[in-house]
Length: 540
Image (cartoon, rainbow, N blue to C red; front, side):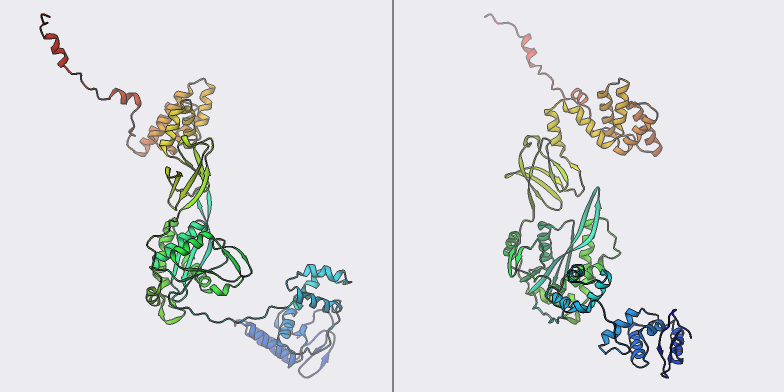
């Protein structure tokens, strides 16, 4: 069997014969190759390859190139296996390398600075006369760079109700309208029973962090004595050595719930390995291939999973029992919940500009126009946004997680419109522009023909009150195609759409002002005063 690679090479066969020119492997090599081919359908593990390399090298005295050719592996793999075996290399001595003279300097430098990059080290040895190539130098440095020592860890055991571990986990993003919100998972796990609490949020701010704590305590019916935190910004503001500065809000919360916040050491993930493994368990067993409608639906599914599948798994500390059984005993050891739970509101100072809106979390919320150019305070929870001025509440709005949305109270807008009569027409145009953007093109064509824009705007607004915005937009586009910039064309198109869909005629719920004034109840005049005319005049 000829395995020549195009240059003469020396091969030592089983019988000890040395052959030059093109290499011809002995009968033993042919049998090995044939045996490897016949077992092609079977999977050859890395352990099998390493065993064959060592046997052919030391027992059969094959060269590295021959082993690589016959086992169909790269010669660097053969060298790595031989180096890991720790046995002296047989055969011809290794060739001298340009780096040999610099190895004492390189090893001493790497011992002092283990993380020094190969590019910086290459520049240092080049200044000392090294003339090798940088890519080859990088491979050589990888062999001489000191490896970190393997560290052994003790198995940590905790008492029931003694400790829980907390962390955030990122699970991608959610598209809500025009906003792209991060999907963050708050995870807390009891160290003794491995009971899991999981809650998803659209941010990782402090109010969401504390809200996750309260929800976990309520779900478990108690509070652990110690909570372990990673070096989160929500927990640790600054750390220098052993000196730690906790977040004051977290310290106040911990004092109210009477537990001890305790951070783990820097780069010591093993100290909170329970919550790290639970996060991996959540990714694989809960979140993977899961569908949900919105955040509330996802949290509802997470609650069912925590009380179901996650609680029915075997407890790692007690494989003979489930997490549910161990947690039933641990629940009694938890601290009692406080009688006055902490108010979990996000509080932020905002300023009102020329328009009566405040910006909060990428959206604008309306306030009374009397508070323009003022500093106010926003108090927000996951569902409601309150805007206060001192102790008085100025506005309440449903919280929006969109981006660039205007959340308005009609009373605020109406009050400003009543005060500024000149703004009514502009207000109507703004409403039309948001609901039916094509109406602006219709008004432009009407202005070119000298039509009354106020009457056209009022007519379109009346149609917008009776029909939805999408229907009005479609009807305006149809009127523009027919080149009839008039509300009647829009109304005819809306009526045709309604008849085709089989819908009932729209009914105006709010009557015009002149109709309301005409139908106002009239109190009849009292007729007793006419009786005085019939009385006879007195002699006086």
